[in-house]
Length: 411
Image 1 (cartoon, one colour):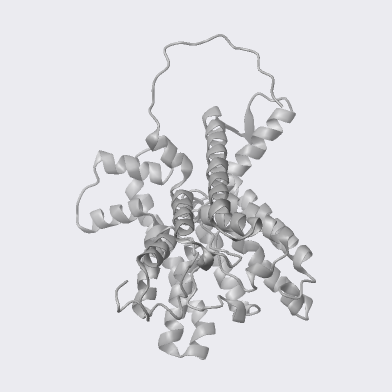
Image 2 (image 1 turned 45 degrees about the vertical axis):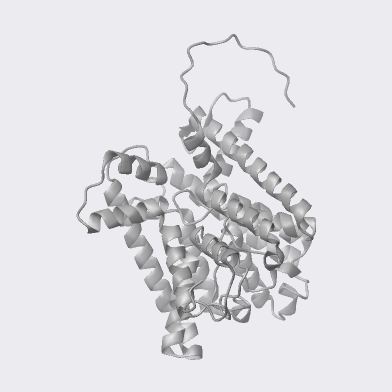
């Protein structure tokens, strides 16, 4: 809200919504980042994106280490939970590995993006646009310094290669990236990494393929391009965007309803744990699929790639999906009562907020003050994770009594 950060006065709710969207690496906006924010305002947004993507616990450990302060048991416990680790060993080393991955990816991305932006905007502005988009892409934020997004760069080869590479790398998770760099291909990978890579590949193929099929002749999206190569280029970019990236090279509001429904599903799934992305996470959906497959094959345990999945993980998946469904249904129900937008636009907005994606069919600036607060809550819970919130609120009571099994009819 400082005068140095904006070109015109903005309300407290506008500033709060923008800050929440940035720190949860979502990308939904109620103000125009190019016309309303100055360089300093955009810099503040970029810093919030970096903090949100890096993770506040990881950043705190880096600050402790830089100041020469030791990490206590309580801090190690919270960091272990934040990074989804099962032991306290090598947490500091993993934190520095995360920092190296972030710096390497964002610096490399900014240098490559300069090839597109510097010739058009000059060295200083071109460098700034490159840095901002590199940070925003790697952290799966979806914020852009351009009012129409990246519509003017729909067929630019550098944009279509560098940005997806950044958000896919940031979205698969730090643990997967580190393991790929250190271990032998496939044979040395853990079950988590294998499920993430397979799930990511399947979702990308489905997203890109179905985007091309559904939007090929839509004159407002892919149909506006003459060549099949240009259409496939745009389909590639938009097909991987719902992995929680949030950029757009075509107007999202002009997508067919079937494509919007597809994107809602992809946004809700999101990317990987310990990554810069939100959503249910790919591994959650993979475990759900494996558990369903085991049920229909009458197996009493869940396994994949020669490794079993514990009952506790399966129960976590059930709890996470149930909590997420209740959260999104409640948000849609409340917004349908308070807003004038139609059902698809509101549902799309809630899915985008929960998946911290940032895609919108244009309803974000039209939300009422209460509607914006609802979306902020959904963004926050989508980034923190409803299961994490439930675990911290839950009380562990050891059971002293076991009851005989009862008969229950399901389905």
